[in-house]
Image 1 (cartoon, one colour):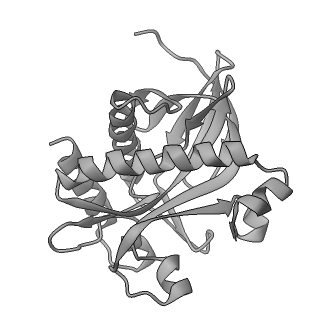
Image 2 (image 1 turned 90 degrees about the vertical axis):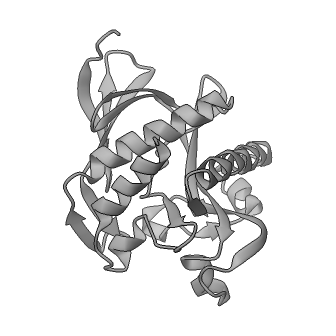
Length: 237
């Protein structure tokens, strides 16, 4: 397998660093050990977290590829890094909810753990200064962020990804409570980007409902690395 040359840093976020490669179409994602919550108000470095997120994301991207769902993923380079296609990011987070948790509970007064009668899809506009507000298709089109056709495709892909992941995770005694996805454009095609990990998904044990995701950090439950390790152990088992 050919080697990849890491070049200049393009971007550093709360949990990842993006590097250019010698090929302008490809970048390297480095997953950091940093954990953040509440728009960065809570921060901590947790050894092992970045490696687990990289490995878990790789498993899920490979699963989606096997089901014919396109993503930016090319391959895992090492414990902390993935080689991916360089996307023109669409500044929209697509959130899929199967069970009531997080902000849905706070906004609507639902009891945490309530199984929703159908899948809920939400759009959030990615803008740190605005706090990533909840928006709809009309807001996004009016701002010129995305067209109705693009948003329809984001919804279609997100719902299909949800179907594939839920089915897979049930086989490993995990409930996919909710998760967020980010997409971008590569050679005119909309592809899934970013990551699929316990940082961006809520995973609960099917029987005990134990939280095995970043809520352990948000809610000071402890054992974050152990929880992420358990998710990885199950999905490769």
